[in-house]
Image (cartoon, rainbow, N blue to C red; front, side):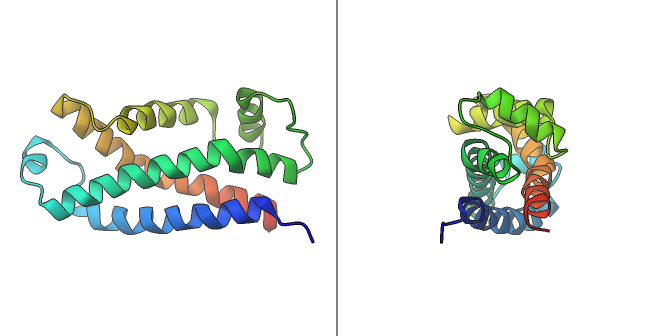
Length: 150
């Protein structure tokens, strides 16, 4: 019996989702983050922000590099030889995520991948973006699960 790669990748995604949900719940009292709150963060709170950035990035990478392609294969769409943009257009047609939102996620992911920005205001803006949008990224996983297996 062939391994269902989509199911395998979605299981990995669920690990990221669980950690994201946990850290989002714990960060609620800090949101929205501002300069005053940022300057008095505890070591534990800073660790939570790192976890948020790490899990958001890992989940987005997994979606873009593996899950989207496997989901489209699962639905019968031929992905071989297609560019990522072509795949993303199909994902958008499926109602999973729109290209503009994905592009915003990519921009923030690239920004945080090289540690947080130097400017405190940019750093705070990026963190608030992650807190606001991590649930949107989680919803992408849920939509794929629903469309593929329910």
